[in-house]
Image (cartoon, rainbow, N blue to C red; front, top):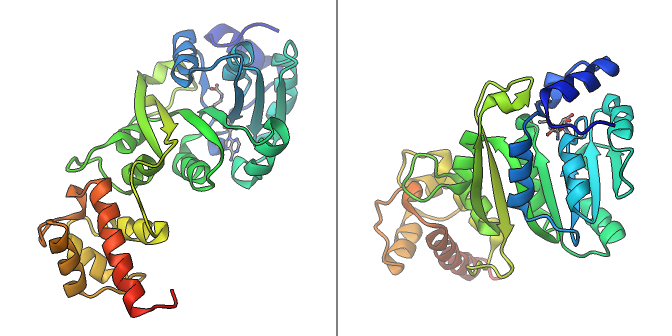
Length: 295
Ligand code: SAM
């Protein structure tokens, strides 16, 4: 089977199988070898690595992963692609294709069974319609991960990497940076895909923290506060937290907590760093405990 990653061989494979590209699955196949090389480099793939690929499509990136990694498991939702993958990956004995929805798969069990529970790398040219759910799912499950290297919409990559005070900064920036260090490795124009997406793309690598850089006493409270702060972006942090149905702190309690940390009472959530959000959540956690000692 021919090496993929260029327009000619991609068209040949699609024609051979009379494959009709499914928009609903976010299918945009890579046709640029430079971009594929950049993904392998950004993920730092070596022959020691076990790689989980999400959405192999016709197997373009998968071929590159098989060449460079020890073992690859590729999870593809579209069953029409399975016979194509059998063909395009026939030269490799270090790959397993699973026909499944990545969001429904027990990934902890997969890592346990296939890699003895040791940390893995995740690589993907993600379907853009479910980028955020997939990334948050990978992070929140606390899987043994070394890094996640993915092609995403450029705007989403910018949001993941954003710093406080910028317009891109929000709940996604804080959630991603709580778990990992993001790094945008490449910007990728629409003409590197077939069919062309309507938006620009970027390769972003998230290196998981081995030791969390911040201390958080109550993760659930931290994430509720983050959601509350960016739900009503134009409001002050005090009003945002006070108005959020799922939190029960009075304005005075929130103001006191901010003052105790030397933060202005009039600050907006968008100006707070992850470390400041964590510190505030720890002070409010203390207040919650005093009121409801059983919690
Ligand atoms: N990796 C290929 C490439 O780079 O050319 C294809 C990437 S394409 C942007 C996204 C792929 O993800 C498609 O093959 C699509 O069918 C698959 N996909 C979409 N939703 C999925 C899901 N929930 N679970 C697994 N795969 C999914």
